[in-house]
Image 1 (cartoon, rainbow, N blue to C red):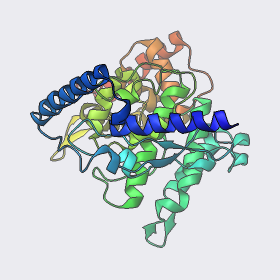
Image 2: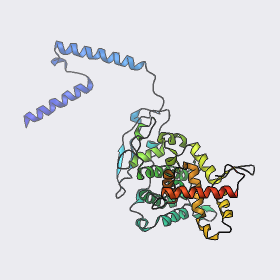
Image 3: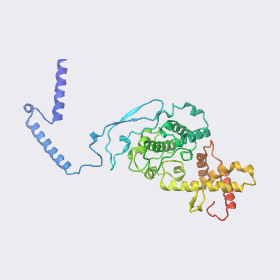
Image 4: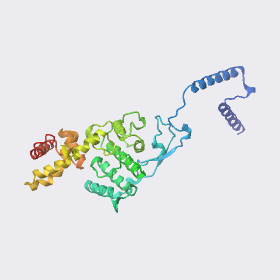
Length: 366
């Protein structure tokens, strides 16, 4: 016991001496003194080299000044868990808000709403729309009041791989969110987009210099915490969409993470391009009206118009290839099974014929 105490005491003295870069003079031999002088010389050289570099002003304070932040885990959702993220010095010229703001996707999206499992896709979509645009008098209810419920519905639809986020009736924030409600809404929509990609099998690496997000979609288990971090990064949506580098048939499935080009093309395909009352290009809205006109004497076909208009718009977005179109259309309507390829090609040709015959002078109609 006395030996162990002595050994512990000597070990502690060695640790202390090493930390202080000192050694008791009485035990220092000639070789020890020479080694100590060499160490001091190297330390001076190293310090002088460091002094030649400018200080990093891309973040306030040193790394030790950035406190660790607890971020709630979102996978699995069956229990509340948390991790502590070590302080990270930002590598760019802004302090990345994902550590400072601690964004968290709602935790009770799985266990908190057990009735969602028994609902059909149509019922889920209707409930999502009703909640998203729920009114309190003349104003929408605050997003915080419906947040957990609408996010739970969105996750349930994602897990089923039905009804892509773009085609859901989900509240939208302004282009530049300013309120806490709008910031949370914007980030939730980005998180849902990433979860949709993962749930539907898109497992490519994320590009760009944001190395911490590269494998969010690549791994088997959805990286919920990294998805939260991605959503919280204060970068333009056009830039974030660039990191994903999605082909059109995938990019048009997302609701929030989109390039400016995808956003404009979808707006034109859905609403048309009308300038000063002149239609330069028709969209889903105008095609619906044309199809209604074409079936005025065929009332038994009018029930098909919503689907025909959807097929026309989907072809505008992703092209006429029947295989690509049938799958994209299934995501658009939340179908259990896509329309057969040959049937899709036949339907598209029939729809174009109807539109062109109703409006033969518009070369952009088909």
